[in-house]
Length: 189
Image 1 (cartoon, rainbow, N blue to C red):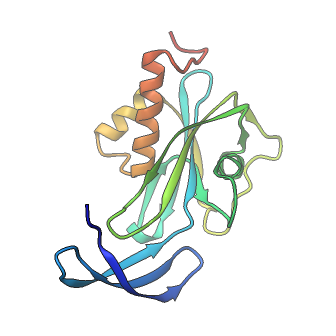
Image 2: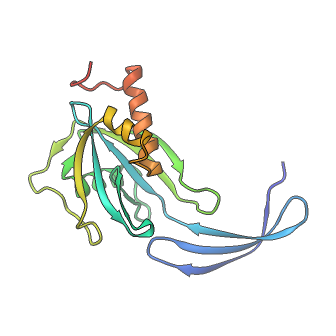
Image 3: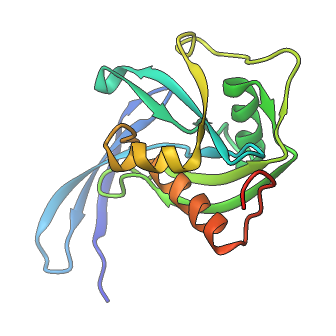
């Protein structure tokens, strides 16, 4: 199988969240073209699952879409950071809870047509409320946390109330594990 060949690569923008690279490429057919790639360091996402089967969701204003969105806690990886460490940190900062156990669910590419961002998804169980509460960063001061039963979260997805891709993916993976019995929570039969 032939692949697209990079002939020239130029970083056109270096930012705090992502970089923009423009590549001149040659397709297997011999045709030439341009590929614009947003380089992103990746991140970690957490499905915080309470013992009663509720999921802790955050609600915050997202500037690019100019809306408040319900989402799972998540954050960008620092250079060389273990995704599991990032997941635990983001859970604590955004929700004010720590995890007894963080178990990796999967890793996903968010938008591989133009971005190399990979998100590592975890489920957090054995949650404990931290005495100091949330540690929000600039841009998160409007963030609120809500515990919602997972069945209601599924309905919110089905009714287009939750539209964030990483959240939909993480919630469905956890819900499937609960249904199959591979993930036990004490408050559910």
